[in-house]
Image 1: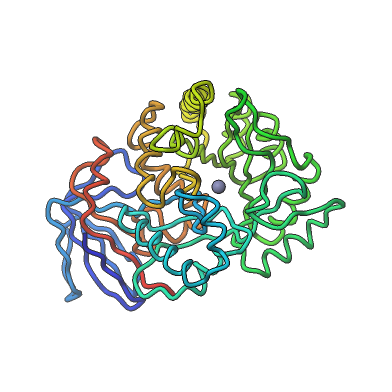
Image 2: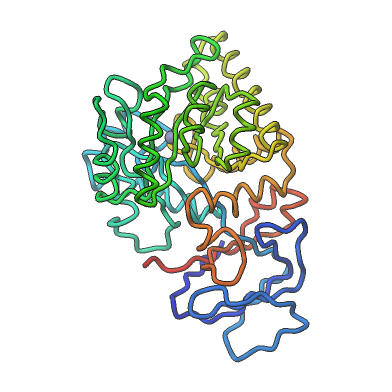
Amino acid sequence: MKVLRLTPQTSLDLLPDYLWDGESPALSSRMVVCLRQGRIDRVVPRASYSPDGSQQLYLPHLTLLPGLVDAHVHLALDGLDFKAAVARWQDPEAMIHCIKKELEANLEHGILAIRDGGDASGWNLWARDRAPHEGPVPRIVATGRAVHKKGFYGSFLGPPLTPPFDWQRTVKDLAAGGSDQIKVIVSGLVTFKNWGEVGPVQFDFNELRLLVEAAHGRGLKVMAHANSDGAVRQAVEAGVDSVEHGYFVSDETLHKMAERGTYWAPTVAAVANRLQVAKAREYNPREQDIIRRTVELQLKKIAHAHKTGVRLIVGTDAGAPGVYHGRSYGDELSFFLAAGIPSRAVLRAATSIGAGALGLESELGSITPGKLPYLIAIAGNPLEDLSALQRLEVVIIPEKG
Ligand SMILES: [Zn+2]
């Protein structure tokens, strides 16, 4: 795989044999993507293209498409060993090493933009702002530290809040600390002891509504961890921008999400991958059965969400047990396919729609004039066969800064 880093001054004409722009129902062939001053200036058919002396890059037999977006990761966790990862947060040298490897893994899988769902030490902010990146890195949208209620799930994601809540203050502090979006924990985790068990709801409708108001007042989106239909419905009605996980959501709530334009990252790998490798041994047969049923139900909900018009996005929850940065992205895509989602819809979730959830729709996620060249070139037609994404030949990415 070749990585091309472009400076803000770059003038370059890309000549792939095929192109998928992030939206269209079909590939177009023999197009030219002209980059000027580091941005996509125009996309023209090769027949009407007249070179102006800018450098040219032919991409024979390859399909050029927008870089992939992982809308839910945790760079501070590695998917291998939760306790060891949290202990490592005290060791900056080890963290530099780990985060560097994770960012590389994203690029190796064509993932050029990620949104981090938070960690209590704020390593995701550090990865975005201060990590010594010598090589190319994906665009990082960082939530910093997540908001959760004292005594409830989420202590490793951020400091606990105690009532009465001062949302204006909380959001102001997070924004000052560099959070691009506000991550709120609305319910607990899906556990597998009993079917449908997800832990209690942490904030009521009014509390969430005021938090969303405070965040939107500062131009920040709200990313809500919510499981159980009650938690998801309340979050959606309070106006959150994206629902994360959303296990046990009802069809009725999905309709509401479609109406309101709420994004949904169903993070199937975060539950399904627990059955893989050594992890399966931690669960007895009854629990394994609950995991399987939970995944099956989630796939049905994804199918319904697609039919209803919910803005599905691809978020792996990389860093969660059994979910690895970069390489588990393909798992999540496979689950979308298994749910019956057509390839093009999966690809839109993975590119243009994902970019919207990250608040980067004017920067990346499609091949249109004005956008930055976060692009990948692969061998094959991903609209016919999504596994073509594994045949990644070229990554094109703007220099950080
Ligand atoms: Zn997460």
